[in-house]
Length: 181
Image (cartoon, rainbow, N blue to C red; front, side, top):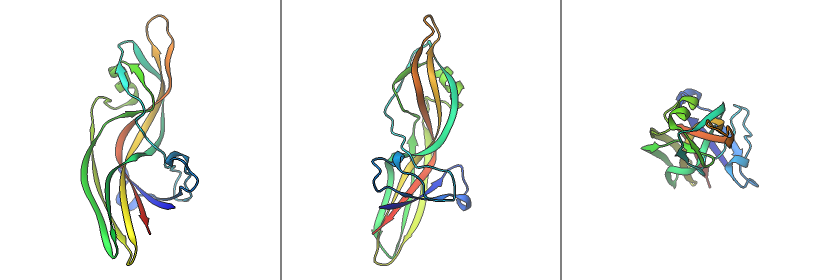
């Protein structure tokens, strides 16, 4: 099965990158590799498998940016038999997601990653795709995230690492996937 994904959010509509990824044999979207030459983007998953709990003495260190990714959960969908134009026009509220469970001081995490990790962001989903005559098309929208990776250290004795390679993702836009059969 092939999917065409157009990334939006942070890019103008004219420069939206079209990716074709082959998902055959891939168990998750993060295992799929881009076969498009139009960019260095890789489709991946941003499943919120963890949560941050407040701990006054937990502080993130070694913060670095990681590539943007597309989430795995469908936030909007349109389908129909062609000839038709599929449209999605919605607004969703998305919050920061994390790759692991960890405890941290929210203020120091907000300062380290550069966005308020306690607030949700509003994402506008607006897209359209023409479906050819005789085909059945499905247009799905996913949240696009930018991310930071860091370790969390205890700031009181003992000064030990309490979480390694935690990833925090901020919603920044939308990824679209279109399939036709």
